[in-house]
Image (cartoon, rainbow, N blue to C red):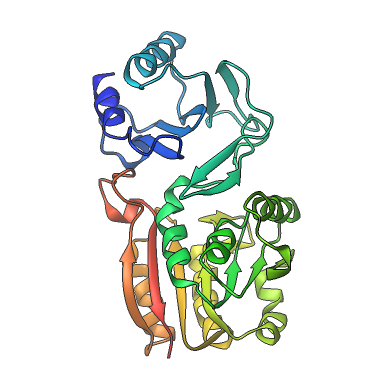
Length: 300
């Protein structure tokens, strides 16, 4: 347990904000690849990808009590090895409307309602990047899910954001995220559509100064990296303005950063890669290809 304690002790700044306290999924900590711990004050959320004995869980909670500046009021456990189980409380009661606070913006969490809580801590770098680059821009947010990028873009001064996702429930959560941050909904649109069947409509709504592509690693027949990333890259020149930017987020353990660079080189050879970003020190990875990478391009 000492290895977990030492890592958590490095992540105790930014009081009150959402933060990854322990990232075992990056395979940097022996015997803890199955463990993730997030802070969404006042909630501490433990995620396990393999079953652990109750005695180990008890020791983990005791360690959190001893290591964190204040004894956690609420500890929630997600056991991802169990199907269709949103999780269970180890201590306390969940607040009625839990939120993640990040860079003075709020995002509603669905802790206890679904396995996916509606917020991805490892995209903090991406939200910061979008906020910094969105002033006066028309933004297209593909695979928008709960619209975190849209909130960041509009907080950064975007003139308009189009959010597209097949999941109507996620878009409703996205609208709520905008209202939580006092963002006028008239500056955002929410389209419950499948991307590749809607390219004609999107072209009419464009062109866009910034296109954000953050697809799931895999989503049944709707999206697989091998089949759909090439198709997505080929569609970008028709959506982006001349000199427009594309933020492409890759989350596929089978494909490293070179995969996207190769696709852009093949299908948009004149695109300029402006930067490659990773989630940062809170998300250590034994191999860069094992984690999320964010690629920023400028199109001709």
